[in-house]
Length: 335
Image (cartoon, rainbow, N blue to C red; front, side, top):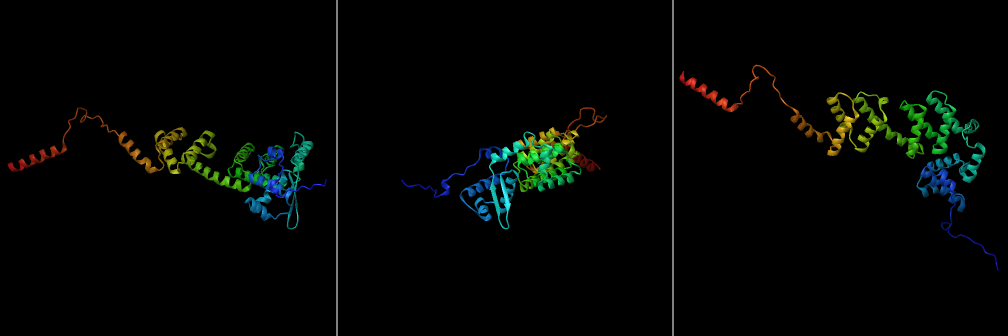
């Protein structure tokens, strides 16, 4: 019996092995496009040879610059090794299990020990990030803070550029407290922010939101630092959920101030809640209702004087005019 040679005629018939550790540990915190690049690259490494950057770009519907960012991200995670040549890039895949094992053997549970931090700071990008953050904050950052920033890279998939942008954003809001910066990072992670572009879009959206909030606070005579979580939730509801315009919110604030002479968010919420239930969207919608209320609420009460302290009779004005004119005519005839 002769020897057999097996060959897959169509590579689509084959299987690309994805490590369970990659799925469990690395994929959840990574940008979706980065995952696409990793899997497509792994596929090509098994069944292809060299490919052009534009081929992968066209295949995945991504910019070549985004594909390069993806490879740099996976290199920072220890899953690939990049070798840059003159006009090309060599990508070597590293077994995720090997990366995790080396990580645990070297650093154990205390992954952010002083030795580990010192070793990580040997990376030019991380050192640059560290120095830039210190310059932004205007102080030396503690080892605890450095550990926090490194954990965002390892656990959230943030790049050093994203972290710098995050700190710049916090500084622009005059909130540079350690805990506040950490809270913002958690919010960005929950919002699936992974790239600088993601962060810039997020900042643009939130800057508009907070600019609107500042207008309302200024109108009420409050400062941004006075804004507490329950009040922010009210503002989120008025602008975000109910989609009220600035004019409508300020009108409700004005009514509140005129009626109770104090900035009461619960009272303002009651006004806007009624408008929302009634389907009011513009100031014109509420004008007829305000007119009715004004007419209904106006009551005239004459002051008590010697002239009106007794029950007054009611007269028909036209009848009085006729009588007066008639009498005037008789007097002229008599003359």
